[in-house]
Length: 283
Image (tube, rainbow, N blue to C red; front, side, top):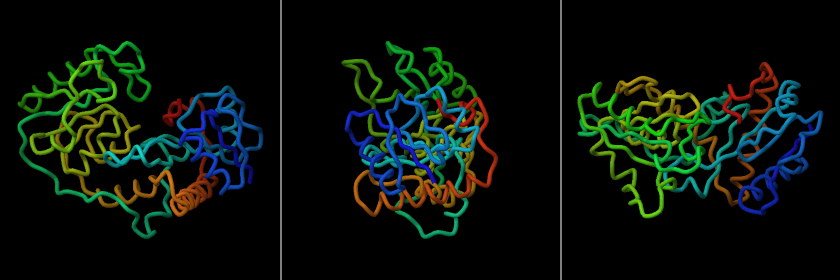
């Protein structure tokens, strides 16, 4: 089995993870700007830069593995996630983990009722200078997206809305929002487009609107402006726990490699990816 991992050569934690997983999978490293070699069975990358022949090798059956930051609360910057043949909610679920032992994960809270405000999780601040700063799932929203969504949600739910801008996308001098977990008590419903923040609100029991299936929380929310409290959160959280691993520690890196192998075995029995790869969240 031919395994290839792409790195950008900066030597940071992302390259470290790719190198360690490739060592465990018996593969080789290429430059992130290079073509994926023909005959590659598994291709690993931290997020994706659409190199010219990626769609071609995917169509030939190469299994694409996307790594990204963790899912759970503030520890996500010390952890990484694994998505197979897609990104986050658009990736392939690995069926075998349903009967596997529990992995570390946050405690689920009961679905909440009450709350005075609608929370709008904005993809970026309206003063952002770069288009990428107001992007969600690679769909560029107009600067008024958050305001329009807040007005619509207020009309539907009959409650005032608060807009929460991404704390890392704020302009200089702008006050940072309070910690997300401090907002749960006052929140009747949280609304986002595709943010992974929705994972935290669902775990906290806040009814959540998630508009794009790229979000891993899409199946636990509503794509429309309605407050839903679906069943199946335990199974959903169990699945997410097998997608997320510590960035350091041999045991965790071993477990991530084992998960990738399980996913590849399943992917080989399913139809190959078809262009455009954007349908799988790969950009």
